[in-house]
Amino acid sequence: MKMRNILLAMTLVIASILSGCAKKQDASERVLNIVSPAEIKGFDPIMADDLYSGREIGKIYESLLAYHWLKVPYELIPNLAETMPEISKDGITYTFKIRKGVLFQDDAAFPNGKGRELEASDFVYSIKRLADSKSQANGWWILDGKLKGLNEWRDKNANLPVTNYDEEVEGLKALDKYTLQFKLAKPFPQFLYALAMGFTSAVSKEVVAKYGKEFINHPVGTGPYVLPKFDQGKRITYTKNPTFREKFYPSDASPEYKDYLADAGKRLPLVDKIVVHVMVESQPGWLKFNKGELDYYSIPKDNFASAIKDNKLSADLEAKGIILSITPLLDLTYTGFNFDNKLFQNTKLRRAMALAFDENKSNELFYNNTSFSAQGAIPPGIAGNVKDYKNPYKGPNLDAAKKMLAEAGYPEGKGLPEITYDIPDSTTSRQSGEFFQKQMEQIGIKIKISASPWPEFQAKLKKRGGQMFGLAWGADYPDGENFLQLFYGPNSSPGSNSTNYNNPVFNKQFETAVMMQDSPARTALYEKLNQFLAEEVVVIFNMHRQSYTVQQGWLRNYHSSDLNHDAYQYLNVDTAKKEELIKKF
Image 1: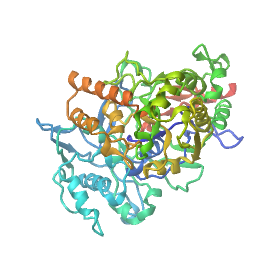
Image 2 (image 1 turned 30 degrees about the vertical axis):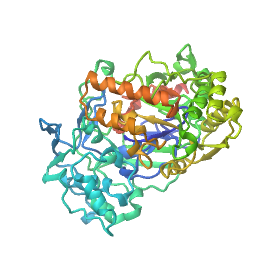
Image 3 (image 1 turned 135 degrees about the vertical axis):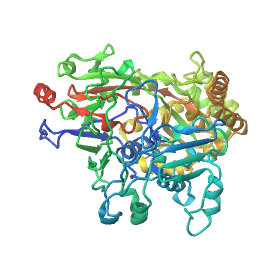
Image 4 (image 1 turned 90 degrees about the vertical axis):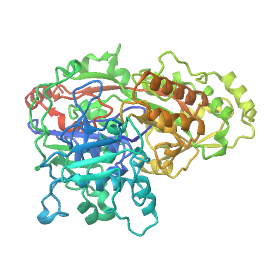
């Protein structure tokens, strides 16, 4: 995304629904149905800052780079770029060759309705659109201050009636039809990661011009699937893009994925249709999975005990050919404070609340004891996470919490106003909100829960509204900087820093870290910053989650991934095996 925020759903719910109400679909059809556990805000790449929108964007739009589907650790590869870029010795200039013959999807915005060829200038336009303050892009934070002249272009055009997209920017040029050049304002080793995110996807200026404000509902990209119609309903249907370029399933893989090469060399995408069902609650999807109507599903917390025995799949599910995969996620769940509210500038109040929170009980209730305690912002497996570090303000320690609350000036909660806690409107989020409410009651803090649909919840945070909130963050790229930047002052809302935390000391050290190449020195600074955030209690750090996903035996090539929002083009349905296994349901 992938910058994108993730709602504090206590289970990851991604499913494939292969039938309508009670009628099963013909097993010979290659149709992949997926569940989105949140409403989709729309299909404008520069606005897709949450996991769910990012997954939809990834079906239609493409970026210069992508991640190899069958490699660990994550490996960047060319996508719309023909090759990886030529980089100058000083790390400032990046020159790309654009893949020839790539077509935008057919649409009425083009002459005779036929999509034209992608050019380097389309990336210039798309990135300027990301930078244009009139666009109010959620993803501007990924390039803010990164390219020479881009911020100056943004500021110059901010107050003009019409933004001048023809004005040249030094750090962003199409040298010819197929050559794109970036010049950084200063070294930024994570720059290439930004070019694999949905925010920097190629869009066509003709399509944006034709649909105007309705562009968000009329996506036209270069990707493997097209969306004939989007009506904000509960069902989104994609069909294979008939003009999609020649792109093939990988023929190489890491040892972990050596058994995923049955489709090696086949042209992508592998299924003809994808249907996304918007299902905020998990139980309907779980019932469908158990009828053999879904391809894969993340096990809901309320069904975990019956599905998993001794950390293995139950015998009844295994007998149907169902497969279990367990994958640690590069994510962080947390309870955030809005630092615009002077109340939360009181460090001892924040520490008291963290000490009162029983994360062990939370893990039991909402994660079936499968998650790992988050001692700071950076998850295990990424440089900056210190394996043996223990956050001194982890609860439950009610005596210490009460003492700290008194030192904050609110003995037994006296004098402290009621605090509003914002959550997305789902059963699990409401349950977790009520749990947090009861935890705070133990030390005299009153919490009022405010639930709203996911798009409204996000909009409130973008407008710097609310006091506290439950949220999670999934990695946009595999670097500790992506988690530390959540608390960098200039990234405050509507950027990725939903807490609006702005500490000059942290900001300065963060700015030093992001200019450093991967090295022991940078890792040490990441670790220092991570510990600083933990002991300042900038949020109540909760959990790093694991994905417990069940998949049908006929689904091929599926694996859980934090970063591959383009995953669906690689998935396949073995129709012969499905016809055999479906008899067991």
